[in-house]
Length: 295
Image 1: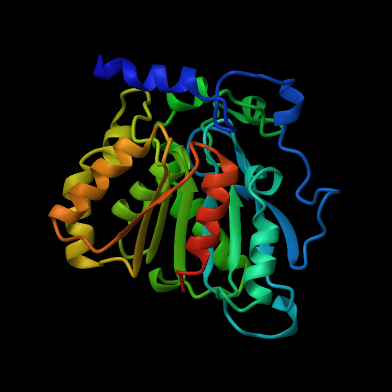
Image 2 (image 1 turned 180 degrees about the horizontal axis):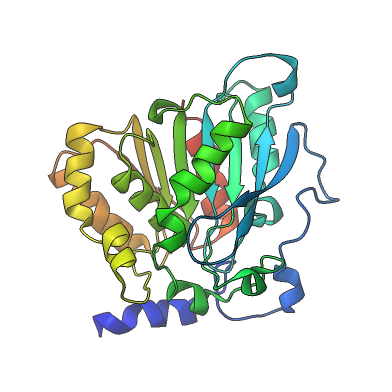
């Protein structure tokens, strides 16, 4: 029965991470980085960065910069914000109110100004498969978390960002956070590269994500307890935050991770929100909380 839980969970999803297409798939296309319903107060920039592993030759990412970025020579910390299954680099823009959250927090001086990077971290076969950042069902996505794009994240995304923007290129000034599968990826990015990410935010992490058996998957996604032990011994995070909704299908798995970290004395915070595996009472307020705690 336990092996069937990931499949049952996917079939139950009706949120933005869900498999069931309740509306035309047109509604789930990536769409523009700036939408007509909100004018960002910061600076929106788009890049195509080269990829060093199998799959597409390049991928698209979106950067959100504080409004005064080009008016000074100061360096900024970076938040890498990851989407979930059935998502892409514009998910946080389209449904997550990321611009509104950043603008209000920065204006009210409740969060440190930073560079927010929204990359595409789905698995794709090649350029043809990736073309347009095509829509992927959650059912497709959860069986494709193979570790290939993840294993190249530091080289292909982080180093690219550090070469383009005035960043502090160190773990104390980097945060990684994501929802659902993005939360799962965030946990492992930090566990695999403990010195590179000082802040971690896992929102309803989809701990049941599956992938094709391979050396790359085993290397990246294997041995979490061992990796986490080394992480907290050698380079403990500045802040580690777990989130889940009261009715979230991932709350039991998040609680299990929370209990494991508590028993082992790993400094972290767990917060339960009133919603489910969704945006309005889950990931949107969780991002707002996370941004007020980092840097």
